[in-house]
Length: 335
Image (tube, rainbow, N blue to C red):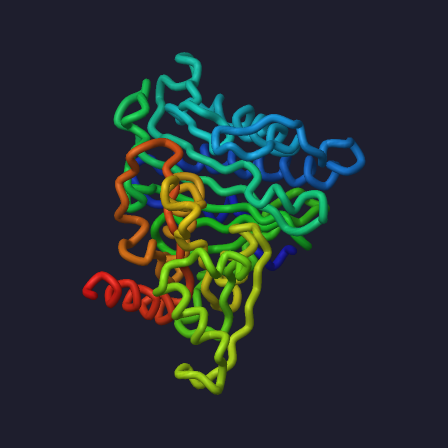
């Protein structure tokens, strides 16, 4: 690994802005949390923490022991830097307050999904952590301070716990990926300047929900399934991991489209995925890598959240495919 740049050296050279030192220290705490989570996941089966707790989180989902463990790790690792004014987790109802003595220099808000794709832990399939950093208007933030559009993000990233542990992040000047070297305990730059291929022949969606989708999504998927014999004149491959981190990571590596559209069962909720913990940070990453992200009718990064746990439809990935999907939704609106 000696030929690679460490993530600490990379941050020192590439982070910009007047508060670079504060952001660097915050990111170092996030990096530490992701290392600890990787260890917790690796030891999950041995320590008996893979099963369900029988309780539900704020989303109404049954929590697994690792959901709670990873949430605790993330909070514990990030509450003492002095630069975090407040936090919010997908796993918790309300804003997480930081003790006054630890937020006196608080400049940032930290939002996170500590264990994305947790339904996969029992079958040993990739899961991840997603985080988003926003500026804080005050050192003692209230709920309204968190409700910022994705365009206001200072930094976003994810950790992928798969065949190797990776950390992918953007601070608004491109996307870079780092791989954890288990021997040294350091993340090294292995995927500089990640780019989403503009064109693709791959899509990821849960086909079992087809009958519940709106017509524009059904049309797009029908064309993909028709392959060379259809209007697109090319064959497509379908993928589905049920972990947003894994799906988006594949798109960054080799292109593709990830879709979790609205359907008739989700209309009252607004969608499946959470805007502030999943859709917004992942959209920031995808756009910074040259891709696009939409609800079908609106750019995800332009959405101003109305609540801490708002849900939205999500379609993101290769730009030309997303533009096609948007055009189908626009035709529906005109008709």
